[in-house]
Image (cartoon, rainbow, N blue to C red; front, side, top):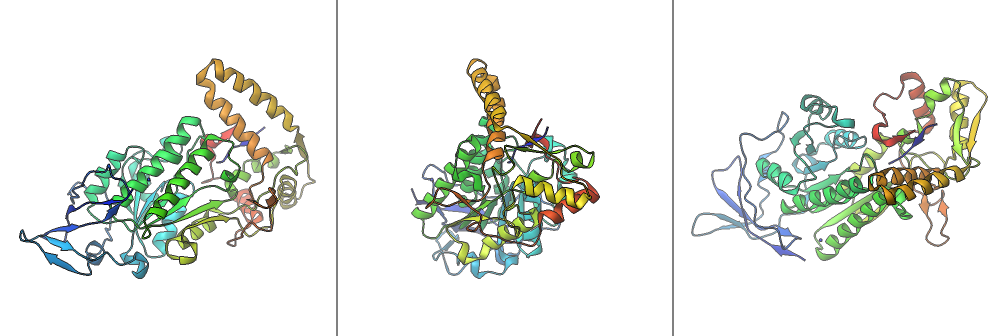
Amino acid sequence: MLIQVYTQKMSCFTSNVYLPFSSKVQVYKPCLSYQFINPVQLRFLSSVKLSQPSIFSRQTLNPVVASTTTETGATVFEKPIPSFRNKNPKDINLLVVGSTGYIGKFVVKELINRGFNVIAIARERSGIRAKNSKDETLRQLEAANVCFSDVTQLDTLERSLDDLGVPIDVVVSCLASRTGGVKDSWKIDYEATKNSLIAGRNRGAKHFVLLSAICVQRPLLEFQRAKLKFEADLIKEAEEDSEFTYSIVRPTAFFKSLGGQVELVKDGKPYVMFGDGMLCACKPISERDLASFMADCVLDKDKVNRVLPIGGPDKALTPVEQGEILFRLMGKEPMFLKVPIGIMDFAIGVLDFLAKIFPSMEDAAEYGKIGRYYAAESMLLLDPETGEYSAEKTPSYGKDTLEDFFQRVLREGMSGQELGEQSIF
């Protein structure tokens, strides 16, 4: 049986910036949101790890409106840099973190297709279980400027961006814990995401697009609490600096999270669900459609300073309806295995008890809770007026349907959709 689990007061400082196309030392005064950050000297080094070709333009590196010259000959920018939304996409520098993840790869591709300058942060070994080499990462993120760094270490991330020596206009975060474990959730969904905010703001970022999750509406899990804490920090940042904005994207279920049973059903096994198969519902969205929506958030003013729940074009589908689609496509009579939800409650109780005695079992207990959550909670907008999930109030976007996805998986398998650490047997 496969259970799938899915898953800052204001101050300013002066920083000397050595730009690759200028012999002068230029001084600019970006507004930062962390008083404890020390001035940073940015340098463009020959050892910079960028994929080719580099697409930073002279205009992007020197977006000056007015300036004066000091006695020492340094150029001081007196007026604020114009809003990045008034620039052409080719002159907008986007920092993407989580670029090698399931959604991140599609977001990078969509942003490049729209003409933005994309700086993609990646680990030296990326992908599920760190299986991808640098060369494979460069291939996957073709046409992006790939910067190999570590978002979990702020000092490391800052040094890597120092080497680039370019300003950042927008940060796009697709970071998410791969396991949903307690420590990993706070390390990635909060700390690493916060590091990307700090590093981006230190380099002039005025907008932050965050990939969150719709399930944070009813937070019972550690990764949900970690995501919500960062959302609160991001909103506070915008409240304290009127020139800084955010877009928080909360998607419903991904297609990948619903595809794990296709091969089992093809082999003649029943479609597994919990309860009566009507406990939960979702409006699943494809990675391509979600990437498009994320890209819309970079420039669309109607998405500024908003929390944006988003689903795909389908109506809300229960597990029973999902299974029926799959059986119909295969020309088979539906065959379901309905598992009492109480079985999971019992297992979670045992794991919780053991975790109190053996702390090393903390994550195992959390995984059980994650499985229980997704077995019973709908991935739809939670109506604050009724306290119930609402399919009608969950926005739809895109063109890809779950039936389209199932058809592709039946033809091609789950290549590129591997669950990795996100599956529990």
